[in-house]
Amino acid sequence: MQNGQSPSVLIVDDEEMVLTSIKAFLQLETNFKVYGFNDPEEASRFAQDQPVDVVVSDYLMPKMNGIQVMLFQYLEKPWENSQLLLVVRAGAERAQLFRELRGKVEALDNANSQIKTVQRRLLEAFL
Image (cartoon, rainbow, N blue to C red):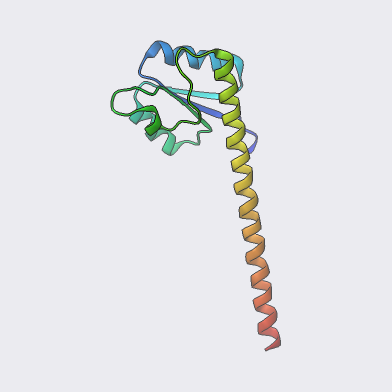
């Protein structure tokens, strides 16, 4: 989704079986880049260095809880795969829309700046 790239999903769960299960499911059902971590602090460091569209995180983990890692929407365990997939896809779409909106706002800011520069030059030319 970033410049035509696949959305990225970060999975954080201290239970290896859950992490592996979600990761495998998303890799089978989507074209998303899926990253998985058992350590929430390591996942947070990864998310600071890499663009991440969606975070799927366990709530109760050692060191941090899921809200501290980042949550888009809360799902209870056991989850239904179809519901998880719907939430992850919605989160990826939301991230793409925010990215597009940010780009349009930046373009408007640049255009506004250019207009102000032209206005200033016109005033200087006539004074």
